[in-house]
Length: 253
Image 1: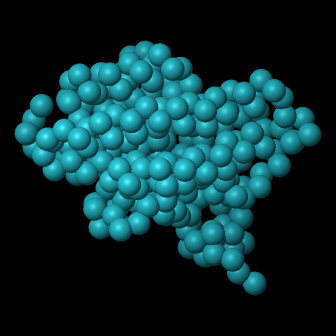
Image 2: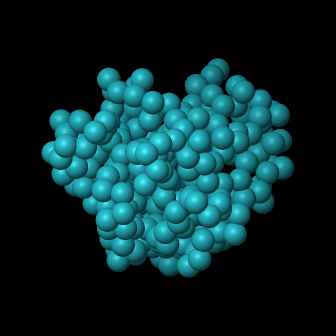
């Protein structure tokens, strides 16, 4: 491994959108970043020197393979960013949500995310007991304003993000004594392919005052918050929620 990239990070769901921006930002900051996604082959636009690993986070075997690959090749894991997530294939009223859609979203966004984080947490605890140089691990969960803002036509997504927000708090409480700070980043309305189909709707809502900062967010806005969480400047806190939402969370009259 290149000595200039001693620290290792993995970002789930990092082939596009927010995850890709986060992975690229950490790479620019000098991390050896493992990009991951559900594609069997590496993305065509990913530079050859950047490692890519298949990982559908809802698949326990692929979770295990990802962690084993990282530890076997790099012998450490400094930053874990739980970003992978899916939206409902079809937006349906909460009274019409199907068990199939619910299970698909929850298996990726919550169940898979929780158990992969559990595995990584145990590995980080073990690594803390080894003589690694400059080892200050941290975990970061990418949730959403949907953790608390209701969308009645994608109930399963909102429930999954609310659950992941609680998971972040649980890991923060459990890992504090192990020296592993945990952060939750809540993106708001971010311009990605996931929001492309409703972009005009969101732009209109923002123009009408939805957010104090009058624009949609960019994936780079979320990536900068991840960089802040990894900087070490925020380490006298854990379980902290960082809102990348243009001020949406501010209650106004």
